[in-house]
Image 1 (tube, rainbow, N blue to C red):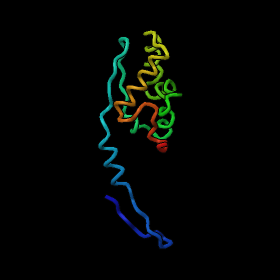
Image 2: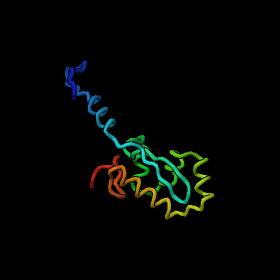
Image 3: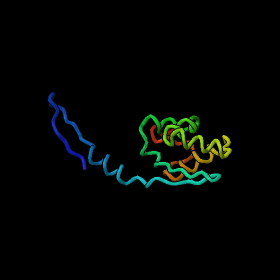
Image 4: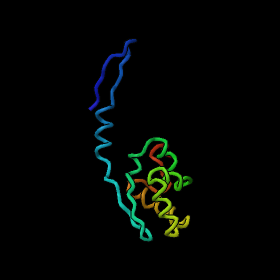
Length: 112
């Protein structure tokens, strides 16, 4: 539901707060993954901050984004389990799918 009010200069201002809240509330739950004995949980990509959404969208900085979300201790556990770069790519691709995105699609970027 949008609400409209007049700005100080007489132009209309449309509030999207209620619609934005509905969309946020409709996001899927975080997903827990298990790879090589390491369990970790990732939120839906659209629930991330705008900056992180941009960084994960093209898979070029998936490792950096995972470090920010999961923290150093979990990343060290992944290193100890022998994760390879292909494993990080797999995580990013599955994460995008479960978030309702096509691989390589960033919700923060315009559609091409």
